[in-house]
Amino acid sequence: MPANQTRSRARERNNVLNRPEFLSLNQPLKNRNAEARGTTRRPSQRQQQSQFQPTETAEHESVENNKERKELPEEDCMQLNPSFKGIAMNSLLAIDICMSKRLGVCAYTTSSWGSVRSMVKLLALTGHGILWMIGTIVCLYRSNTLAGQEVLVNLLLALFLDVMTVAGMQKLVKRKGPWEMAPGFLDYLAMDIYSFPAAHASRAAMVSKFLLAHLVLAVPLRILLVLWAVLVGMSRVLLGRHHLTDVGCGFALGFLHYSLVEMVWLSSSTCQTLISIGTFNWSPLY
Image (cartoon, rainbow, N blue to C red):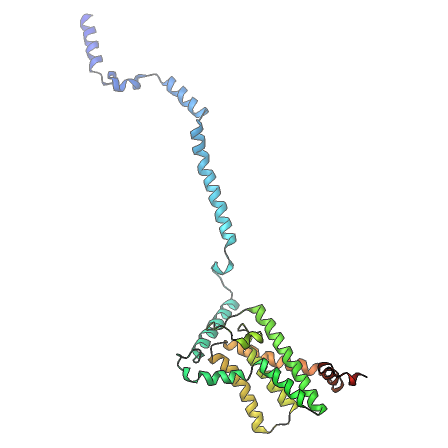
């Protein structure tokens, strides 16, 4: 028996599990299971906070991303499947801007045609609305015939209609020119601030059509009148003030103004009444 005891003691001493660093391995499993159950049943507050924080941050980030997507303007959003109409419109606008910038050869004095800039500006000035109104009023004041006064009053009405319509459309569209130049003093007076539609082109088309219809002119003068209208419209493109589409729409708008004036043509008696009111001469009313 003593030999057996000495052998068992020697085995216990030689056993690795009896060392101090391995004593936790010899503990019963029941205590460990109880501690594990206790920890699973009652998590600490730090663990709860650590569990809820990631979910809250994820929800907050998702809400912010949704807000950013809603706040993004439509211009910054990429259309993966654009329509054929949108592609065609964007292509035409790009061509219009490119061609208008290339044709702006008199935009500055340092441009390729900068030496003739003053002549082109003088040509464009002949289509200004303020000058045409002043000239029409002066001719109306000096006119002595009823037929001439009737034509001049209707021309003045057409000029007012042209200026107000073009100014209203420019305020609505607010399109800038290809070179984005600041308008001059006379442009501010005529409310010709933006690019679309071209006011000079509209006025030139309306005036030329009006004069061709109501004045007896020789064939060379009629050709020069049409050529003047075209050159006035193109001069604004050469100066870098308008795009090609602005000038084209201006010509179309000028023909529309002429048609409207022809529809509401004022008679001679109405024109005499307006002249008497304007000159404070009330004798025709009695």
